[in-house]
Image 1 (cartoon, rainbow, N blue to C red):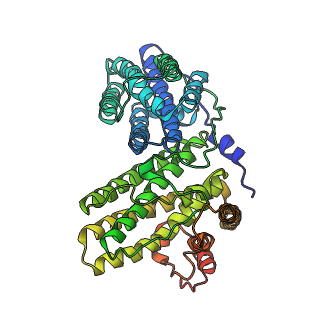
Image 2: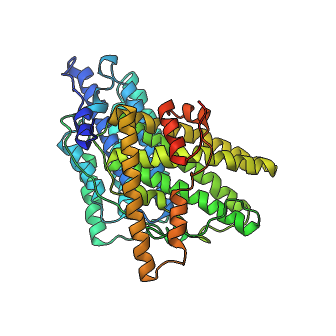
Length: 450
């Protein structure tokens, strides 16, 4: 069965049921469903800006917004009558909501979007939820929860906000404020907006500067000395940042996927955010400074511009799937050294990675169907990404932009799983079929006992 992104759009169009009830009860339902459409629009917009925001502080703010918006959507859906739950999640949005999504993506800068969330969306949300809170029952309680959540996530102005804005940013904030203020009472309707915007390289400020596409610098995964340990932590930090940037693009570039898909990825963004905070805290305690080593972004480069099935195959199934066994080796390293803090961190990360890979496998099956179709997608996506990155690395070498041996390091990075044993039990927990596990063994050129 061929994989076609149009299938995502067709399958994601839910059947919106007709009106039920009249008067005040119907008005409350309409307001709740409008708030769901509003929150989903902002979730997609915020996810799209994670990779496009240079500032790490803004990236973290947007990660918090995405998973908090997902929690608000679930809270609001539970406030609907049982017969209506789930309808607004899959029904899409009307022209106003689509315009709001498109406006968030078209902000003149990352900082303008972040400030717009705090200075324009927050007041509009306060109006929406204060009105709902005057109702009775579940809708009122849901509105109170959402209002508290907004205060917790935003916490006032965004980090390092500038005192002044340029003309384009002021115009954008005014437009966003007008749209947000009109959201109360929006109704769900046909889905049809496309807001995909290719991001081929994540934006980064100097402290988290990414290596060039096709560039791979020497790595150290033993951390024997203090400086090597700082480098090791930078490698882990780099992966977490790449992870929530990549997953954010999976949401933003495919806004018509079902709500369950966006919800699963929002939770993955939450997990990657928490992992990053652990590694940053460890770096600080060991006297390291963020920015001493440039961060690898190879995983983002692999997925950029690819169809959704290829992105899931490359990132959740291959990259994070390989991390399952790689974390096993890291756990043994820190266990041998008696470092209980690092051991605890590694074990927590591995548990989360199992779920990320499992969800990726579930959505690949939803998109592709049978295992043989998934295998074909994985094989093709890896071959195409590999050829593209090798060509890019060769071009960098011709221009003298990389150190000697860069191509060999790139090939080593792409083939790093070769010869590594396959953890059958861990992969079964992560949703791999026996056929998929056997195929992974063949790809690594190792024997697998099932």
